[in-house]
Image 1: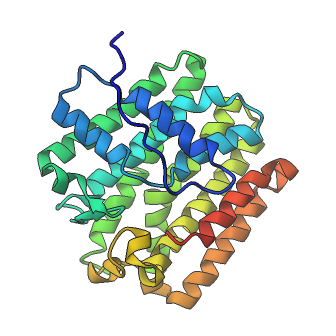
Image 2 (image 1 turned 30 degrees about the horizontal axis):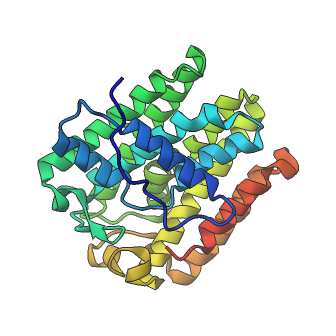
Length: 304
């Protein structure tokens, strides 16, 4: 095995209060995963640039939290948490491309195709996506059945019925009006499906029953939509230095958002409704669900 490359630890400057171990834990695991001595440096540099370019690490934190509330060994979730973050990072690279949203700034820094070039950005995204499935397939701490379930779940959430479907609907919305049901469908696929998968990962690793898996799915679905509604609200109410992108960039790009469709006041009401739905989904878990309820509170109260 090749010796580890000595690189600085990328500390997350935006830790979620009360959940500090989880963002730091996944960063440490990602350092190991991305210690790829046989990957050409231009490609590896771009991959690392995008994975370690800040962020709150909410998705891998949800993987760990779901394992925690279901009394699963957190060590069994390390590669699953990494896989989720790799898929998320790949999706951001491709989302920012000139053929997609054509964004120059992500988290206050140049996007991948600006920092490097468009071809390198495309390949870095492709490589991160493939790596996500590779590390799940090779996680020998989990049974073959569990690994297969995780891979199948992630492929569905990230593929043509999930995140990719949401992206194509989003692109279509630049030339035609998306109504309220269509907007919700778009974000359920583009954002909600991957967040829901984070919760289902924990249930799969814990060997939970079908009722618990369903509760996690419904919580994740509501939380995912709440996350997107909050993003849309911050696009018009946030501060550029805090949210890491120009204020009202979605409006400038003529994108359909919950605020553009419903108005700020009604969008805020819908955000609160999703919070209620998320917490209601967890009622079968009783007091064990409190960390996930706290995460839901954080999602709707964050300022970035």
